[in-house]
Amino acid sequence: MKTLFSLVESPFHPDFAALYRKLGIAAQRFDSARNLHRALQKQPPDFFVGEFIYGWGNNYAGANVSNLDVTIRTLQRFAPQAKVIVFMHPREEDHIGKLLELFPLHAVLSYPVDARRLEAVLAQP
Figure: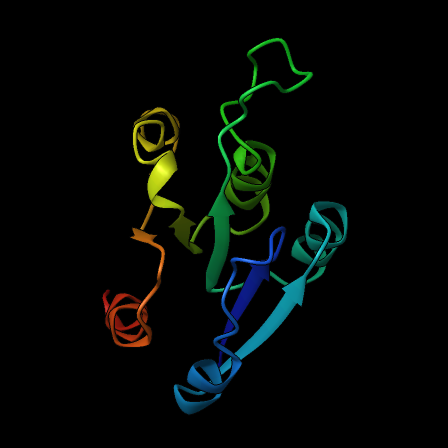
């Protein structure tokens, strides 16, 4: 059975639990990156879904582009085979390229995320 971890950090993140069940994917939702990182060390997922939030005024002195940088680096270490799917608010579109320069992503989907589009992305090799 395939596994999927999702990091839910905003109210915009849709609940696709029914879709994941339909596709036979065991999904776990995390509301904290720390808890997600701990889970990654125990069980590497096949898929990761997270929302891109550009780091407009982060405390990292420009070291991180977004909220997902540390999580994607952790995925590269503990689950290098995981397909990374990113949800993005359209207002962040001008900045997603900065994340793409740093990390290979399986897909970027803009809100509102369509379940059929996500299903197609999950089926892609």
